[in-house]
Structures are given as C-alpha cells and as structure tokens.
Length: 426
Image (cartoon, rainbow, N blue to C red; front, side, top):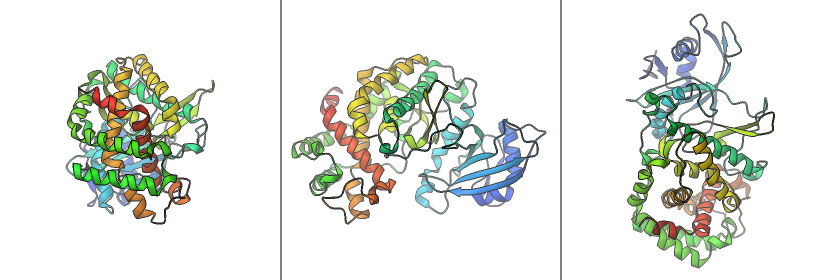
C-alpha cells in the first residue's frame, strides 16, 4: 500500500499515516477498520469518499474533514467524520508530538464502554503503531452551531462567550465526573490500567530545562516587560514589590521542583483519569430541555491518570482573570462534590487548591516566562500603549493564549499568596 502505511498494534490492520494514503486506499481501509472496531456490520461497507479535506490547527499531526457514503445508510452511521493523524511529515516540530496519540487510542476504546460518564466524539476507529509513532483516530464530527450545539469558543477569548461562569461549571463538572467514575472502579479495568501515572509525561513538546541563571534572566526580562508594556499586564502584578517577591518564590519553586512533583504524585486520593487540556477550545456545549448546560470534551492527547489539579489548571488556565478572582473557590468545591457524586473519593479542597497553585507555578516558570521574549520577537512594534485587544495579539492565538495564561499565573500567584502553599510542603 506504500510507504505511508503501517500495521496497527491493536487491530493488526494497515493504517494510513497521511491524508494522501487515506485517499488512495480509503473505502477498503474504512470498511475494514469500522468492522474491526465493531461499528459497522459485515453486511455493510463504505462505498465512496465524498470529501477528504485537510483542516488546519492543533499542535500535532494533520487533521481531515471526511464525508463518506455507505452501501446501506443507517441512522446510527454518521457520514460526517473527523480524522486525526499522529504524524505531520512536513513539520518536524509538530511531528515530535506524535506519541501523544498512544493513550488517545486506548481512550477511544474506553469511551465506548457502557455507562461511560461523559460525552466525547463517538469513536469510529483508532489504532497506533508504537515503533514509528504512527496513529489514526476517526470520530463523529462535532457540528458547531448546528442541531442545538453552541458555536465553537476559542481559547482565551472568553469575552466572546455568553455566561462564561456557567460554561466553566459545565466544563469542570465533566472533568470531575470522569475522575470520579474512574476512581469508582466502574470503568473496564483492563483498559483503565493501560493509562500510566506519569505526571511529567503530560506535556506538549520537549520539556524545558530551567537553570537558576536562565530563570533569573527570564524574571529580569519580565520586570522590564512589565515596565515598558503596562497595557499588557494588570497593575497589581507589575508592582516592584510583587515582582521582587515573585523572583524569590520562583527560585524557591525551581529549587523544590522534585518535592512539588512528589507531593502531586503521592496524593493518592487525587490521582484519576483526566483530560489534561480541557480548555474551552477542546469542548462543546449544548442545553437540554430544562435549559441545563452540558459539555462534551474532545482532543484527548496526553490523557492519563494524573493529579486532578493538573486537569483543573488545564481547564481554567485560559479563562479570564475575573473568573479566577470571583469563582475559583466555587469551582473547586463543585469539582470535589461532582467527583464524590460519581463514586470517587472526595478530594480535600485545601490540598487541591495548593496543588493547583503549585502545578501552576511550575508551568509558569517553565513554559510562560518566555512570553515577553515572544511578544518582542513577533510584535516588535508593541509599546506602552499596546493592550491585549490589539488585533495583532487578539487574532493570534500564539500570542493571545500564552499572554492570558501568564497573566493568570501572575494574578493567582499574587492574590492567593503562593508562599504559604510552598511553606505547607514542609
């Protein structure tokens, strides 16, 4: 079948690594794949690919919009599908993330289990070849803005979202129900056991090696950025007093990194199967007849058993700062209640808050302190009058999202007093 086909580890079928490969062998492959996955009867088959259109976006792999025709169309057989490849042979940076699909393939099988507690895009086929990092995931397509589903919301643009607090409550509820159901033991043990507890593996891209000198350089640049770009950070996180405190505590976070990871790992009642990046751009929302808002979650790369604080940071990291200021305590309490209601052990709210803040601090010093350098490089004309509503920032997720996340890190660090949470580690 060509160079861009491999034999999948789970079902033993040839799987395509590229869109072109899928186009060439599509009808036969899709028929065999859907039959192997148990979503297509042996008396039916895919007879035609009507649309095979590449879709831009995401941090790894290529994506496709796929429309197909069956020999025997049936109501339960969706013809509008979404295809995700683990590979991007034209972009080495994106291709390095190919291993993220390995757990996503297992999750696709788990999501088909009876009584699965949350809504995800219905899986039609998924397989992965570990030696090459080649995988494919095919699901039903989410039809944003149609059939009762709200339009898609983009990361770090919550001002465009109606009633953000309600949406984040639905989001946190979904994350908690999966965590609680997993801890209840009601999910198939043979599939649940396939997800490791490897907290540091939940990341996109190569881990950043942070030395004290490198950290100090980034902190110094942050101070210069806060002074020269006052429109891009809130006043209370630009004060010399806070920035001096931040510098001392950031070095303490770096020095206690192993202790923080150990604290996250050893909190056994807080370890559960979670979506690592349940931001609003990886969710969709709809209302039932009682006007209750519901949330489904997609893009399950890096899914694993982790400290639930990591999942909460992933869900809330791109929210408006006001949500953290006004609703974070309520969302923590909601998460704990919903986890217990789903059958899991009730997380300790105080410990959960501490873990969210400590994980946030690690992510902040590792991934987000380069925001000043990024803006300087990509937006050299930014000055004291520039704000985040500047179209060059607002319309560029690569600038908008990390700036909002950095703002949240600094705000929470200042308003919640990270120092007391570091002291609680002793």
